[in-house]
Structures are given as C-alpha cells and as structure tokens.
Image (cartoon, each protein chain N blue to C red):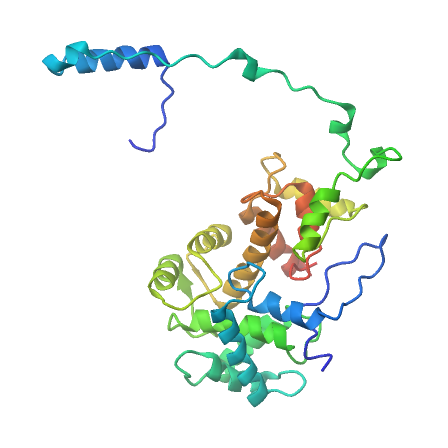
Length: 213
Length: 123
C-alpha cells in the first residue's frame, strides 16, 4: 500500500529546517495533485469521474504497483472509445511515467492517474502515443472542438510550442511540456506574477517535486 | 495598421482632428477639441531608496531583520508548493543569470522550459 501512493515524492527539503514529514493526508494530496486538471486545488466532477475510471483500471490491471502489461490493460479502459492499445504505446507511456517517480519498476497510483489522463488527451487526437506527432493548430482546434476537459489550455499550447520551437511534438514531449507548464503556472499564479518569475520564485520552483533536479 | 502604436502629442492630435473635421462638412465647423491636460508633475517623484532595498542575500541581513521571503513562502506553503530556502545553491542562481538573457529578473516560460530540458538531458 505504501508503494501504491508513493506518488511524485516530496519537494526538496531545506537542510536548515530538516526533512519534511509526510502527513496523514499524503495520499490524498498526491491524488489531488495528479487529478487536478484545472489547477484550482480542488476536485470537480469531471476530475472525480476521471479518478473513478482510473481506479477501475487500477483495480482490474494492477497489484501494489502497475507494470507495463498492466498499464496496457488499464489504458484500454481509460481511452474514451476503449480502443485496443498496443504494447509499444503502453511502453512509451510507462517510460514517461517512471521519469516522474523514484521507483522505476512499477507505477504508483498518482503517477499512473496523471499520465493516463495525458494519454487520454493525446489519443483523443487519433494519434498513437509511440510514434505519433501533433502540431499546434491541430492541438488547439481539437481542444476547442472537444467537449472533454483536458489539462491543457489554448494559451498553454501556444506557450509550449513557443518553448519547444518545434512544429510538431510527440507524446513524451507533450507530457513533459504540459507538466512543466502547469507547475510554472501554479507558481506564477500563486505569486501573482502571471507570466514571469523572479530569482526567488525561480529558486522555489526548482525545489518542486515535479521539476527535475 | 491596427497594431502600430503612435505617440502623438495632445495638441497636435487636437489640431489634426480640427482640420480633419472642419474639412468634412458644414456641421463640423462648430466642432472643438480640447487637448487633454498634462499629467501632474507630482506623479514623477523620485523613488527614495533605503539601505534595505539593496539587500541581496541572507548574509547582508542584520539580526532582527525579517526574512524578505517570509510572505512569499507563506503563500507557497498554503498552496502546497515548494518554498525558497534561506541559503540557496549558488549554482542555481548562476543558472538563472544565464537563462535570463534579458537580465531583467523576469524569467519567461520558454527560457525555463529549455533550462529544465537541458538539465534533464544532462542528468
């Protein structure tokens, strides 16, 4: 059970203040961090339904953690049309997911939840996750046409393509960019700077558990 | 043309509008435009700096001085985000200096994204 909710790990601890302890609400916080698409710190109905769907996928296909075969099984349940997911696609998703956590052998539930949601968004463009690419115009058009909520907005899509400097991005870049942008946005929004971060804000962001060291 | 911003002094703008309107029809003859008043000079007071405004790190703080990042850290902690440390890694500050090419202490997302990407590749 401990490994199931290991999640994204803790923020870097200040050596002067000592290691931060995981509180009783650790599991809930990790799940909320993973499921919170609109970054408001709360779980709305759509996010709750997504979590329920992920729980079904987890219950059907995982043990304490989720391996590659289990991920393939659960991703078929996550996609909107319940299409057959190739193992190569599941491997691409697994690779992205393990880069977000310390344990490289099996996925914890919060990490699985976040990456499964990103996979659901990416596969809604009818593009395979293992060798497919999407461009900015397709992404924005699909987001606007889609009735489904996603964890990426139009300004975020524009910022991401401006940052990558590429015409098209694959699944791994998509996940990495969306997660990085959302963390950036959280800090900028919380501190009221909206678009830019100063040195102190940058240093705080660098301690975040979702930003690579 | 809509995207071009031009700074025209008020008096010139008033004169140009009068000329334009007066030549446009009989009803325009009575049209009068008053230039907008100048901004009061009081608004441009010089900023009075204190010694504390130039404190750049914790080594320059005196005993009893409040932590300059306290308010920011409280906001971050309430939102469940990471906070800035009292003593930060010098290398990270140097990294900020390198990627903030405009040197204006305002880091954009593309600069940050590319730094993180490079760090990930390097590690």
